Length: 379
Image (cartoon, rainbow, N blue to C red; front, side, top):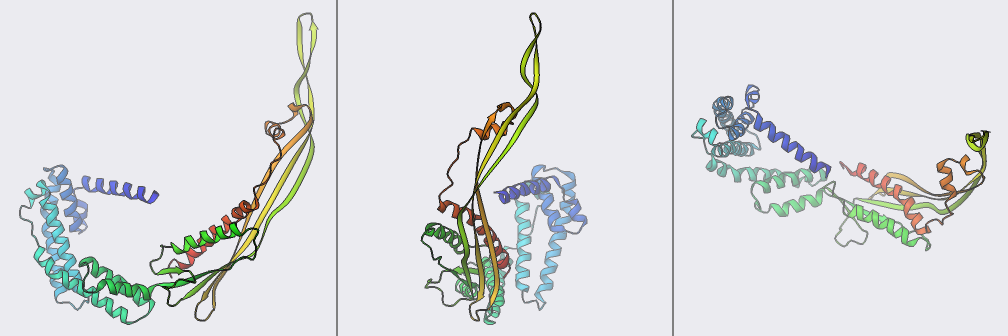
């Protein structure tokens, strides 16, 4: 939601900037394309804006010359993506054409903008072919890194011409080679007392891993997944140790006093009384029941071929459930409001062991998923 909000704010600010700018600064910096676009946007708001008209009169011919010169240079170059460059230049020129045609104010300044639709169509297939050829070259190298590059090239070809040749099949082939395949092995816990809670934790881990989408070239598999032909790594998760429901009871007694409290009154003369101030006391006893549950989960990442340990981390987790109540003898006025409230409480029973198990697993899950994200972020 935050990312969406930032994007919307950024879009509004960008639109406001373009609508308020005449494009003069971009023109002075040699960015003829942006200068032209900004001038057109301003003329949509105000068809007679003098500065924008002058900017457009200068920037559009310069932008057109710039891209046509680039096209001429690329036609005779040895750049393996020269047709891509030419195609993109024609797209830029056609975008300027479309923007001018949709702005009455801009049309008054540039009544005959140039259209290069035919030229762009001519180089569209050639550009897709260049990406396709580059993809095939990388794919034939048959390693993960080259397969990643192959996938990106095929995706670019498909973006230019949807379904170009057999590009969809090639994308799938490249993605399969580029994808690091990790088998998830969650070691069973030899206990029946907390089986539901252990299963809940393991299900949460599986849900995170099997829906992981933060790296296109990474996929986690269960050990019995029939679609997996080979594995690159094995991720082993197991409980090293855990204890649930260790109970500690504490009792603390202290004498509390409070000065300057009205403890009575005295008659000075007939019809006149004065308050008498003194110190009040109370014996206050506070009881604390603490139930501690903790555990340790080990995570190892192994090379599936050599069984070499690539990463070994341990993640501790702890949950302390605390209940407090109190009693007192003496004058309650010696107690603070907080302590008086404790005297009104009764001892309560702790949550069931299953719930305590789930609670101490929460910090373990958080640590482990953060480590997995960091380890596989750029792999």
